[in-house]
Amino acid sequence: MDFQENFLHAVWKYQYFDRKNLQTTLGQHLEIKKIGFHNFHEGPDFLEAHIFIGNMQYHGNIEIHRKSSDWISHRHSDDSNYNAVILHVVFEHDRPILQSDGTEIPTLELKGRIFLDVIRNYERLSESKDDILCGSRLKETQDIIRYSMLEKTLIERLEIKSDQILSIMENTKNDWEETAYRWLFQCFGFKTNAKAMFRLANAVPYKILKKQGDKPQVLEAILFGQAGLLLDIGEDEYADHLLSEYSFYQKKYGLRPALFLHDWKFMGVRPGNFPHRRLAQLAKILATNNSLFSVVLDCSKEIAHFRKMFQVNLDPYWEQHQKPGVISKKKLAPTLSKNTFDLLIINFISPLWYSYGKFMNEAHWKEKGFDLLQDISPENNFVSRKFEKIGWQVQNAFDSQGMLGLYHIYCKEKRCMDCKIGQNLLKPPKVGLLF
Image 1: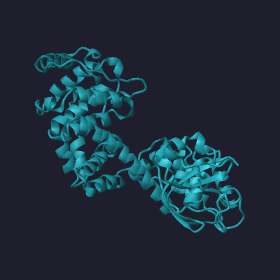
Image 2: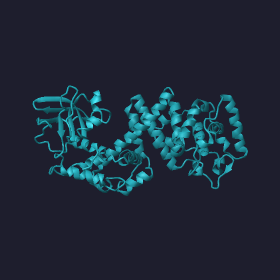
Image 3: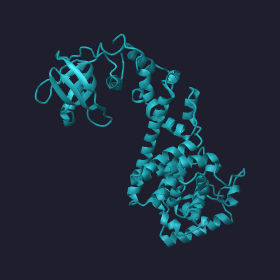
Image 4: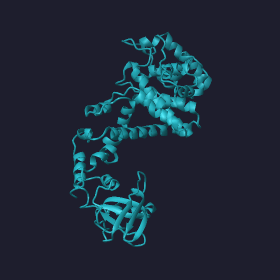
C-alpha cells in the first residue's frame, strides 16, 4: 500500500484501528487515554497526549511516521522538541529508536490493525483520476461538512490577506489611512497589475494626493507620471494638460517616476482594464472620498455605501479613450462594472474589516468581514466552475472564496487527509476487517 504520512495522522486522530489488546513493540501493555492535539506547526505531530504503558502513566507528545527509521532520516534525535515524545506511532517498525538516555522509545506498530474499509476509502480517493479527487463521492458528504470546510478555508484566506495588510500597517507605522490606500491600489490592479499598482502606491504617499482635494485630473497627472505611463500616450489637449500638470507637481514635491512602461502588463488586457483607465478610476475615487479608511469603516452601516464609494463617473473623455490621446474603437463605460464592484468588496473591504478587527482585538469587525461575503454575488472563475461541475452549487462570495482556498490549498495539493470532506469520506461504515 502506498500512502502519505498524513493518512496515518488521520488514522491516529480518529482512532481508525483496532484498539483491543494494544501492545508496544517490546510487548508492553498500552492504553490510550487521550490522543493529544493535532500540531500543524514544527515539532511532534500530536501534543499533550495521555497514555498508560504497563502500570506507568505518561503525559507528553506523539510522533507519527510510516517507518520507525523515519525518525532518524528526519533528524529528530538532534531536535530538543522531540524529547517529550512518549509514543512513536508507525505503520511499520523496522528498527528500534533510542532516546538520549539510551532507552528505546515506546513504539506502536499499526500494520495489521488499521480497518480495511479505511484503507479502501483512502485508495479510492488517492487513485481517483478526477481533478478534484473526491468529486465523484462529494454527494456522500453532508452539507454541514462541506459548509464547515468552506468556512475553514475562507478564514485561512482572510488570515493570509490580513497578514499582508498588517505588514503594510507595520511599514506605515500603524497608519490605517495609508494602509487602506496601498491595499486599494493592489486590489485595483487585480491579478494582472497588482504588484505594479502596489509599488506605485508605495512611491506616492497618500498625504500628497489628499492635498490636492477633489481634483481628479491633478491626481491622474501625478499617478500617470509616477507610473511611467505618460510616455505611452497620444497627443491631444487632455494629454498635454496631464503632462503640464505632472511637470509642475513633480518639481513641487521632488517626485521621481517610480515605475516604467515595461512594469505594466497590457498583453491580453481589455482596453477597459488598461492601467491608465484603472488609475483614472482610482483618481476619481480618491478625489470623491478624501478620508479613505474612515469611509471604509462607515461602509459597515449598509451595503449601499459601498456603491457610493466606488460607483464614480469618469469624465466623458474616458468614454472615448483607452489612454490619454488614444481614441478607443468602442465606447467605454464611465463606471465600474458590477463584477469589478463585487471584486473590490471581496478583496478590499472584507479583508480590511477583518484585519482591523484582528489589530484592534474587536471580534465583531472580523465577523463583519466574514459575513459581508454572504451578501455578495459569487465569482465566476475556473475554480467555481469546477465545483459546480461536480454538483456543488456556488451561492455567494462566501462560497466562491472558500472554494478558491479549498482548491488551491487542499485539492490541488492532494491534501485530502487535512480536509474535513476527505476525512469524512475516509471513515469506515462499520468496524470489520483489519489491514
